Length: 172
Length: 172
DNA sequence: GGAAAACATTTTAGGCTTAAAACAATTTCG
DNA sequence: CGAAATTGTTTTAAGCCTAAAATGTTTTCC
Image (tube, rainbow over all chains, first blue to last red; front, side, top):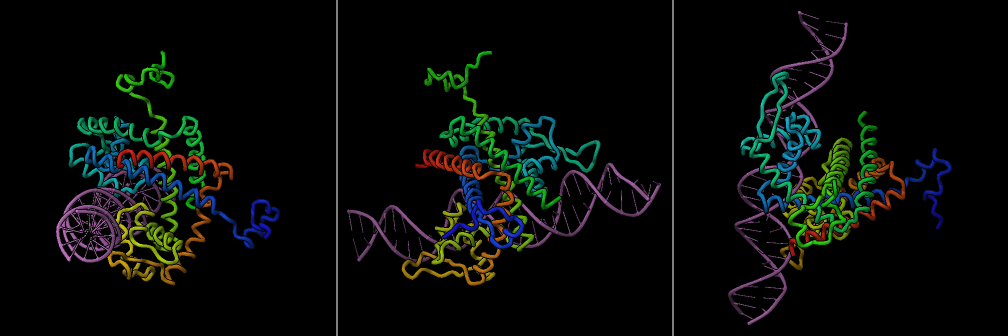
């Protein structure tokens, strides 16, 4: 059986798309594998954070963002960085303020804006968790050589750019 | 400044771990990039599924599992494949049975077990969505060459194996 | 056979997440 | 200036998700 729809048959790209739906099984498998890896690692990290520090992953992630911003961030900034919805951040922050890990104040120059920061307690706890967290990640990726890591970084950068471009194509 | 903590200084591995905590910043960055890619693509797919078909991503994922199993699956199977908790599957299935996409029956040989299948409607709808879904994935990964795809597959397989090993080390 | 272990699922309690609508403050620009 | 658009946040409604405990069923093995 001739492989009429494989990559070598790209002479008439005008009609081809209509007549022979392309095969994207490879990309699909890649996506599933990417998702599997992430889910696997995320679940492991989530479990360890809960067991070791009784903290949820979203809270840890939010604190990680704030740790990199000593002068604080607005809720919008956090929302964009974490790639989650605004409403999500509102609730997350509420609970972390309640538990004394975050400080929140209305900006003095723009009263729409809420600026949040880690409290002293929040920063101390985060640093303690982050140190251990880093060793977990190192262990989870332990079988990758430095070259593997570099190569993955490169290919994932390319993937990210490709996906962003695709997203922008749809939502211009 | 001499690089006292880099990889070349591994002569005294006994004391080193205590004196010079290793630097795992590269692995950490890799993990964040992996997470970013997945979140980006997942969000895009979620949005398109909702807009185009008014279906949620978890429902689509569950139907995808069942589409590959014409004879049905048990809830446990689904739970393991999707890497989500048992209780999660219970609720998801409940809603999909309610909407007529799934059929659920108690196994005749083991009354603990619930076997679920796609209904005719469920299968038809899934196939329709899956066809379009595949083109979205292809588009999201469009800038990767076939070689990139192969290489990513290889490296992610290695990553998955590494993470599974690490998880098993902790939970034997 | 029957107690104990293992298994499959559901329930519970709490938190996370989203999209969309509502609200509030600021900026744009006619 | 002042209406309209934009921006930042919160609220709402619904659904997703987890860990742990509870329930019912089957298997193991003495």
